[in-house]
Length: 84
Image 1 (cartoon, one colour):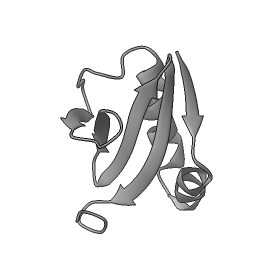
Image 2 (cartoon, rainbow, N blue to C red):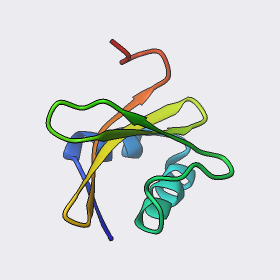
Image 3 (cartoon, rainbow, N blue to C red):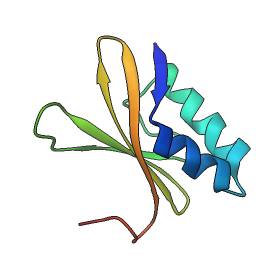
C-alpha cells in the first residue's frame, strides 16, 4: 500500500513538536490501515462517498480513506478542535 498526505496535513505535521512519532504511526498504515495497535486507535466512521477511518495518536486525530490500494490522509487536528 501507498500513503498520500494532503498538503494541509503536511503543514499540521510540520508544526507539531511530535512530528517524528506521528509520522511513524502514519507509516504503519501501509501495513494495516484497519486494525488498532499499541499507541494508536483506529475507528471506522461513516462517510458519504467512501468509508472514512480515524487514527488517534494521543491528542492528535487523522482522518483517512482507502481507495485502490492508496491510503489518503485528508485531515489532521488536535482532540476537541475539529469535531462537528
